Image 1 (cartoon, one colour):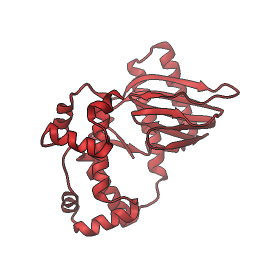
Image 2 (cartoon, one colour):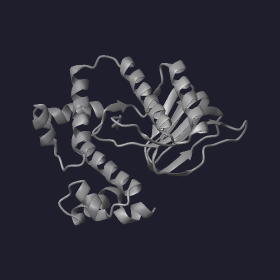
Image 3 (cartoon, helix red, strand yellow):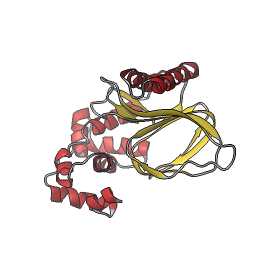
Length: 256
């Protein structure tokens, strides 16, 4: 899940509509410094980031987080609205999956058309920012309405993820999550591992690492400041953690 704070409008950078050439088009390869949303209205889009490949079909959207490599993986024919934006992740007020169907097609495309017109008349205006925010809210609302009722275990896993996301700026442990949610540490770990295929300990580490990468890519903070922001005991402790998890130093990662 992606989490956005929408108490104020998002920082909308660019918005447009793309129609691929008839033959041989593949999305370019580049570094993505901000979020990008793509709402496919015709055909299909094949695109990937550092971690996985996405196949986005007509009637689906994709929101890509900042990544070192955004690249097309296959030649494809498609039409889609695209938006680059920045938004605080916490405290989150809206959550939605990065890749899913959009349900209210007429409303979504109407908002996209209004935003396209707003950008043509007054680029990056207050109106555009609110329309962009409304577009995100509508996508999130469609996902919420379509969600099935969660079982007790599914709800527990969701609560774990929400707790870890909210505290990923701190050095939390499995026992902290278990204590907060009122479950035995071993039971909680077993439920989470069965549902997600990854241990809760590793999930916590991955969330911390993901936030560290985001700060290194999106901000001008020094490595020491990133360590402080993520509440590591010392810059040395953070550097050792980052090198151990990625095989490269934080400085090398930022310049890669």
